[in-house]
Length: 243
Image (tube, rainbow, N blue to C red):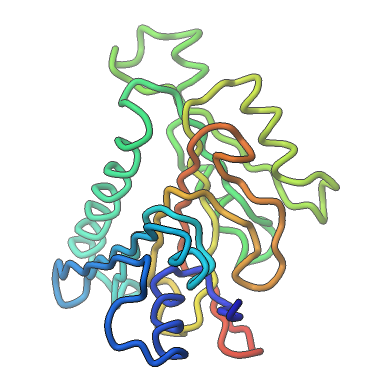
C-alpha cells in the first residue's frame, strides 16, 4: 500500500489520484466540497467499498475535513462561525449512531507533556462532564441533559498500558453508547497546521499517520461506534516532520 504519511482521508485521496494519474474520482470513493466562505471549506470523503479502502488505506465510512484558513489570526466572529460549522458536522455524525439521550464517553488521546501531542488531554479539561451530576445532583441539570463522561488515558510510554486495554475496561463498566476520541492529526501540509479538523465515524488508529500505529480504537475492538475528532497539530512531508 502507498505510504501516505498523513491521517487526512482527503490528502490520501488526492495523493492516490496523483500517483495513479486518475483524473476523475477514485473507485470506491465519493467526495463533495462545501464552501462556507473564502476562509472556511468543508470537504466530505466517503469510502463506500473495499476498493476505496484499499486505495487510501482507510476503512469504509465518512471523513469530514474542515479547513479554516487564517485561524491563527481569526477574530472572535470568525472563530464562532468555524465553531458552529464543526458543531453542525459533529452532530450529523452523532445522530447517525446515537440518539440525543444516550450516554457518551469522550477520550483525549496524547501526551500532555509533548506539545504536538497534547491536544487530547487539554480538550478533556474543557468538557462539560455530566455523568456524576445526573447520578448525584439531577435537579441542577435540564431533564434532557446527555450523560457525558471523559478520560485522558495517557500514552503507552508512561503507563505501560495500551489505550485500547484501558478503554475496554471503561466501556465495560460505564457502558456508553458511543465514544468520541480527540487527538492530534498529522498532515503533509504546513498550511494545515492549526487550520484543519477531521471528523470520522470509523474510529482511529493512534499514531498511524506518523508510522507509529497502536491498537485501533474502533467499533470492532470496543463494541460501540467510535467517532474521531482530530485537529492538525503536526505535519509530515516526505521524511521530515514539522510540528
